[in-house]
Image 1 (cartoon, helix red, strand yellow):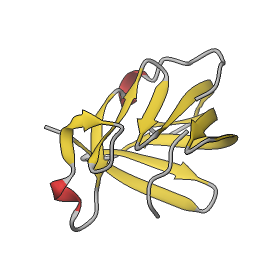
Image 2 (cartoon, rainbow, N blue to C red):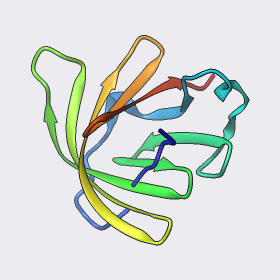
Image 3 (tube, helix red, strand yellow):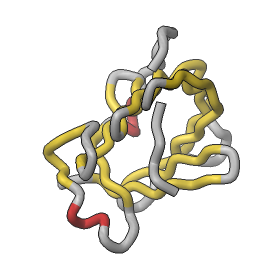
Image 4 (tube, rainbow, N blue to C red):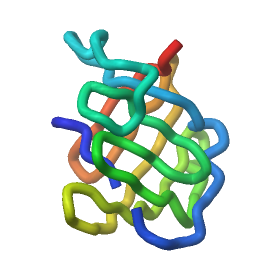
Length: 113
């Protein structure tokens, strides 16, 4: 799945342990630019309660810690490519970065150096 992200007004939750710059973790993604956020071939970022992706942005609100896991469930209010939408999104720390889990999809991201 091409990583599609989500921007809308809302009370943003501090992303805290997920803050950072990331690139996808799949063969061929090593060429993604970890210095440029939000552009084609650029990195993805979690910062200030937002998930910023390629031409898209999500406000992460209403955090719920998942008991027994290093994971948080959010309401994501998103915009990108001329559309706005809402979804539930879970962020979870992994050995090398984070996993973003949405209904039926998991995106594995590695932390940029």
